Amino acid sequence: MEVKGTAIAVLPKFIGEKHGPEALKRWLDGLAPAARTVFRDGVMLSDWYPIKETYLEPTALMCELFYNGDSIGAHEIGRYSAEYALRGIYKAFVKLSSVRSFISRANAVMTTYYKPSAMEIFTVEPNRLVLHMAIFPVPSEHAELRIAGWVQRSLEIHGCRDVTWAIPRSFTRQDPLTELVFTWR
Image (cartoon, rainbow, N blue to C red):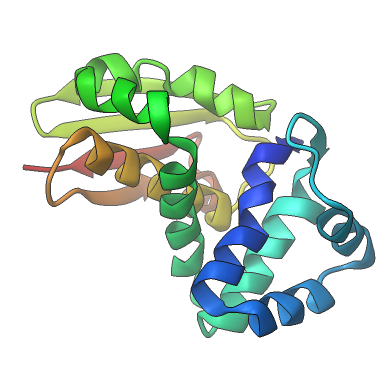
């Protein structure tokens, strides 16, 4: 499985901004040699990278170093990624469209960042959204949390208030899909 450079390029930006330059150096030094080379040489945004070495393991290391091993750090970087990605014209699109309209692009966004992958809209109701990750060959709590954080923040950018999320079913728990549930007022 592979991940697009745009999905991994935010890792050092997030760590540097949130935890400082010394933390960024500590994170870089802790990466496996191949990943360290990718991040030090500069991530090519349009290139595809092996997901385990450049996305999952670096996210896990970040959680270990700066969140006492708590995977919630993956959720935080997902939120940051949405804020980073949804700027300018994209932010206007999210704000001006209905939840159903902007979330209808979920599969397109998913396949832009991860291959192979698939995301389906299971239901969109007033104040509730259920997404199903139908294809994600490398089950990962960190990936699921990053995606949940990204969707949560995009809903907030849209104007939804008090957005909560849950992952009641997960590939990581041997379920046939990962289910992401969002509610808001």
